[in-house]
Image (cartoon, rainbow, N blue to C red):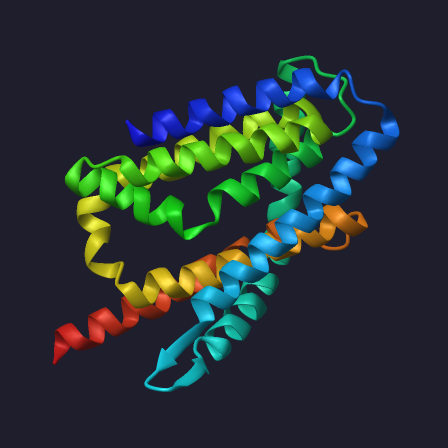
Length: 241
């Protein structure tokens, strides 16, 4: 149920943002886009720092740096070979054709919003919590945040933002359904590592929004699998002892 509420919030927020967009002059929409990029940069970098920095007694230390480098490096190679962003854009183009939209920012809106609302730690933890205990409180909180984000995105990027609810629903829904099987893997360390990598990707989305498209962030999505694979290997090794 939490994922349904979350997807509905994205649709409602995006729809409200589209209504606002129609009444904004071009110069205001351009400034709004850069402001949105600035906010996304801040969300990404603050989340990454929060996941990386830990207090050890009286010292502040950084954890996960090597894993982050390996995740992004391996993820970049895998994503480029699989051409994931091209596939995401292809899906966006098909959706655009289905709804007969002529919005020139449809694809950018779909990809940008899908990345921001899907790669955060709340998506994983909230979906697991919903599946294991039927407690949707975290996903409801996320729904409020995603609704606001989608409203702001749609005011600058249009209807494509609304359709980001589709991958969100499939991604979080799958985690909720498989929660019982996946839960042993999702330790606090894994959640922190996923948050670190995910927030760096969100930072990359912010760069694209603020400066214009500089990199294919969608091709970095396999980076999110590296912490999971690493945790699974550790889990298997510990089980063999």
